[in-house]
Amino acid sequence: MFCPPRRVRRGAALTIVFAGVLAAGAATGSFGAPAVPDGAAGGSASVGRSAPTGHHEDIARAAAEAMAEGKSATEAAERAVSRSGDRWGAVYSQGEYEEFEEALDGAYTGVGLWARRERDGRIEVTRVRPGSPADRAGIRKGDRLRSVDGGSVDGRPVTEVVSLLRGDAEDADAGTTVSLGLERGTRAWRETLRRARLSTDSVTVRELADGVTVIEVSAFTKGSGDLVREAVDQASQDAGIVLDLRGNSGGLVAEARAAASAFLDGGLVATYDVDGDQRALHADPGGDTTRPLVALVDGGTMSAAELLTGALQDRGRAVVVGSRTFGKGSVQMPAPLPDGSVAELTVGHYRTPSGRGVDGRGITPDLEVGEDALRRARTVLSGLGAPS
Image 1 (cartoon, rainbow, N blue to C red):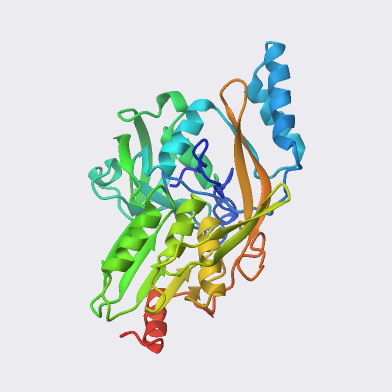
Image 2 (cartoon, helix red, strand yellow):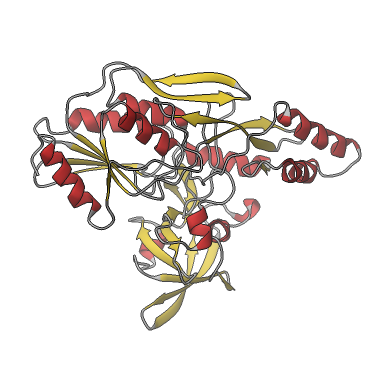
């Protein structure tokens, strides 16, 4: 499951991040909720209320006053964020924030499984990382996760299950154990796994029999933009490319911009505002602008992945196939608090090159399909001049 991740490196470029609940679909059990892996960088949707100018200072002031009175600065900041009306604002301890930074660096501590909440409220395993603790224990796609450390997870939001799998900050190190209750058909059993240090492998590449290259990006962690460009450079010159962003929960905006640069020759990627100050993101020159390209999306395509999708669609660079994306278009920025914790607050929203707002709306594909989306994408590529 994707740890609701969380964010940007201190002093680094702007990140569009996904606070709190991983996805409304995952939390409510609605159809098509994205699957997420334990411990990786991920995100959630936003209905977008911007924090007012100076909001970071208000939170920091509340934390400082609490410290002066011998009270918990973190708890005071959390109360202030809750009162602010910032739906995606959050406060993280220093240890939690360091974990999130590591996740965005492409590494995390976990057991190596992806899962999602089904309509009936049960948690289903949708993928197991090869060589991970979950894989070595024999857990497979389709298994049901019924309990973690003896507590039922039925009906619980995915993010809560993620937190249970990872453990509290002080006992979530590699080598610590977690007990899982599982079901497969009529079989029910328990497994005790040792958490391990894993890499996110956010970009995977495969070539289909007809030469079409599929580049799957599960999250925009550090270096993923360069990996996308390398995959494009190495792809067959005689076939098209499918950029699979289904279930991509976002990540670092700088990496999404770098991925856009693999397919664009400069130009606008997105505009955004920070406390009313308008800014823009531009692609680097020299990207591949000729090879047929299809972007695959679904309801789990969020935030930075939506930013990339909107750029490719508005610039006429890709045909977008799949289902409407999630609609997380708000921008969060971090600020350190006096006790070392970090407050991350909403400061604005981004728009696609044509000026479309994404927040609460999502992006509508050029071709809406449900089942067999990859097959339909290959059919579209054939119409664009690539073999099918």
